[in-house]
Length: 242
Image 1 (tube, one colour):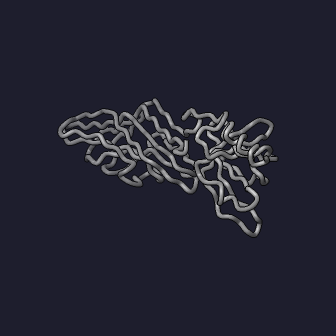
Image 2: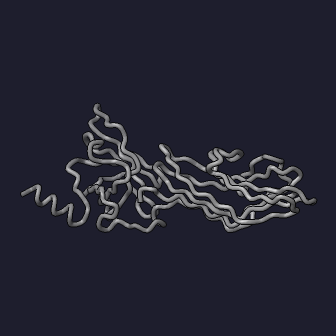
Image 3: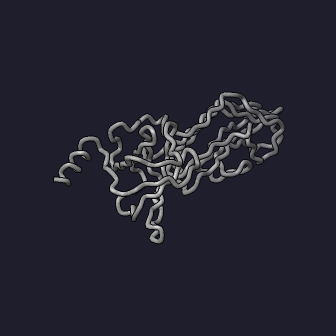
């Protein structure tokens, strides 16, 4: 009879009640860590949903399940709260988990599970050194633990006093003066011109085991360029478990 009631609750709304204790561990907003008593690696995994009550209902995406700590009989669980939910250093009541993509009440708008950087202004670097990367306007984004679908687009350009091959690159990098990989880099170029401007974009997947800062850098590989430009930057990292 007990198993039947549990099955009814699960099939009814997609949430499964925890039969063990969950306790707050730490915060690195918008990511949080809690401990689940016992070995939770046998039934929890990244991509599942978690719900609890701390004054109000709060919902999260599990982005990592740590190694079971037999000495303390607990498992660390990493939670992403998106734009709406924080895990407080307080009692975790009424905990539930779900392997269902959209259990009852879980917000499915991608905007709620995305970190973003939008800069509509025009940024420029005068007399850029050939091949040198510039972090215009100190543009960066902090991407939490987890798997992320990343997309960026921007208008970029370059100008030179005399007609020449011209190019302008934009990249997402873990340093503010380099490119991490060509997979995160996009380029605009022209065979013979004094001025180029246009839109570039890139999309890729990031898998992170720690919160990481990424910088939006710009460069040209053409010599004697007067200015390089970047404007209308839009950068979005959406949780791939959504």
